[in-house]
Structures are given as C-alpha cells and as structure tokens.
Length: 495
Image 1 (spheres, rainbow, N blue to C red):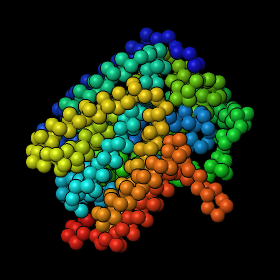
Image 2 (image 1 turned 180 degrees about the vertical axis):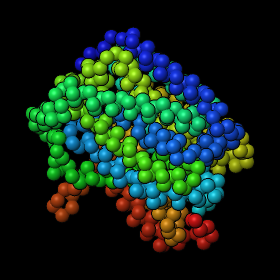
Image 3 (image 1 turned 135 degrees about the vertical axis):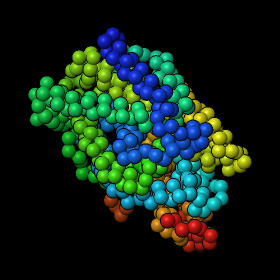
Image 4 (image 1 turned 45 degrees about the vertical axis):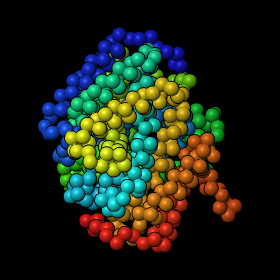
C-alpha cells in the first residue's frame, strides 16, 4: 500500500465533479444573505446574521477539518488508544463554549468588535496588548492552514496524482472565492462538506467492519498488532500516559476557541442564544470524530501498510471501496480542507487589519479601506501557507502546529479571565503572555517541538502538555504584576 496508485479515471472524475460543485457554490455565496462586502463586518463576519443551523455547520466545518479526518486515524493507527485524546477534549470544550462565549458575543455585538483583540482593546485601550493577541492568533493559525494543505495533499496523492500543481490550483480557487464572497463562502460550502463527510464516515463504519469480520475482529487485530509492536502503544491507555492524555485533552479544549477561525465562527452568530444552542448540538460532531478515529484500527485489521501513517485513510478506502466512492471520499476530505482554510485566512486577515495595520500603521483608515486590506491579507495568508508546505518538509509543519496550540493558549487569560474579573491589568496580562510564550516555546524546543514535557516533582514524573505548564506560569505572572500594578481605572464594565 505504500506505492503510489495509478490514476483511476472514475475516482478522478467524481473528485473533480464535486470539487467543481463547491467552487460554483463558493462564488455564488456572495449573493446569499446579501450585504455590503466593502464593510469588514459583512465580509469577515457574514454580517453577524448566521442562525443556529448555519452556525452549526460553520463552526463544525472550521473545527473538524481535513487534517482531523486524516490525522486522528493516523495517530490511532500509529499509537493506539493515546490517539483518542481528541475525543475528551471535544467533550470538554462545549460546556466551556456554552458558559463563556455568549458573554463574549454580547460584548462584541454591543461594541462592534470583529476580533478577540478588538475585545481586549475595548476593555483596556492601548495598542500593545491587543497587538500581542492579534500576532499570537496569526502566527498560531499559519501552520494550521498549512496542515489543511497537507490533508488535501495526502488525498490527492491517494488518487495517484503527485506534484504541487493540483494543490496550487485548488488553493488558487479557494483564494478567489474567499476574496469575493468572504465568510459567506465557507458557510455555504460547509453544508456540502458536512453532508459528504457524514456519508463517508457512516458508510465506512458500517461497511468496512462487515468486510473485515466485525468490530470484534477489528479490535482483536489491533490488540495483537500493538502487543507485537510493544512500547507505549495499545488499544488501552498505559498508566504512564494518563497525565499526558488528560492534560492534552484539557489544554486543547481551553485553546480550541481561542483560535481566530473558531472565534470568527462564534462572533458571526446572530445572537448569544445561537451560540448556546450550538454548544448543545455540536457534540454530534464528537460522535463523528470517534467513528473517524476507529478507521485507524480498521486499517490495522485490513492489513494496510504505509510508509507514513498520514496516508492510512486514503489507502484504506482505496483498498476496500469501489473507485466512485474513493473519488467521493477524497472530495469530501479535500473540501474539509477548503472550509477551515478559508475561515482561518479570514480570521487572520481580520486580526491583521483591525489590530495591527490600522492602529500601528494606518489609524485613519476608512471602513472600506479596512475591508480591502483584509481581502488582500487573506490572499497573502493562504499563499504564505502554500509556500510553507512547498518549501519545508511536512514533518516540520506538523511540529510547528503543535507549537501553535501552546502559543494560542497564552491569550486565554486576556480574553476569558477579563470577562469575569476587573482586577487584572493590561501590564500584568502582557507580562503573563510574554512569560507564557517564552516558557512554552523553550520547553517545546527542548522536547524537539513535541507537545509534552516530563515534569519531575518530589521524585515523581508527570508528563504534561507544555501549553498548560506555560499557561500556569502565565497566570501566576499576570496575577502578581496586576497586584503590583493595579488594573486601569477607566475600564468599562464587561456586560
């Protein structure tokens, strides 16, 4: 299975047909829920008018990405139960969203905020803390966009096509319809994407085990495989992995809705009640994720052998399904790259325009000028991610994405704590952010850009997610400095 498959004309035709469909949908989206796309809140937040159904698809579309469909089964295929940490983290995150995000939405809506850094600026004033929030969001998002490219690259390779040209064409199309339609494009495409992914996953979890002798055989085969492999792998979590697993789940949950793309999905909702309803219904995606993860075990039972675990899902489908379904599944996964990549580039562009370019370079920029700048920046972000993939080996992009989670977690106190406390100062939050970024980056560098650091306390060893370690240091510094330098006197009430 490690050899490149020849191009199958049926699979390729189906793939191209569905890709063409979403391209048309992307360009037509500019006419959907019409608004003045020369205004940033219309282009970058869809006019803040997305109801429960649209928001459900949009947030699900940018939270569950092509790389999720590719990477989670790959991790389960490689290490077993440890790869399931994504499940508890997506369970933890929705109560957090239900409790916190409606409050943030109300403030953002009342004051016209488009980004998280806008909220920080509205509460504290000044330039540098909002700029730090914005810069963190942009830097953490870039490798995340690059990973959508990796997911698409893997799928295209599974169809037998090599080289960078198909990837370049796909993201050129993405860049054009995002430029013209803004957030409306991924919102509309998310409908198509999610329906296709559900069809693919339900078909896979029903038909593949039936062909392999049932789920009992699938789990037995995976258990035998990991026992023979040895090390910290298995279909059950090893005791040495407990703290790493739990801290990765918690840290990832706290970080998930700090990213610009998920924040954009929340702020584009029509009401705080819409945000709450989505927090209730979005766990349906967690069920989907659990089923997707099982594909890793199914690949083991099917005897799939690949040079890179990332190739395991395309190889599994190519082995067990007819060509037309392989093309359909490839299109579903590729479209799952387009939706989040579009939202990520829009979120990053909003941050750059509102919180870096306008306050630091062009303070007199008009609203129309803001939107024009954001559109151009969204193009730059996409092609920057494309160059990132073309110029660097894939493994470095993956490692840097792990750093992205460590970094984005450091804006948590500035956004979440300040919703509930008026005692934190801008100086304290900026100092805490800086310490968290430095410690997180340093520890990750010591580990070879891996996300877990073994903390030694009283003769015991506790492997913990580096992002949480850095966040604790961040919070301690924030509190101490805020006590020494009290919070601003003129802060408006966060209501």
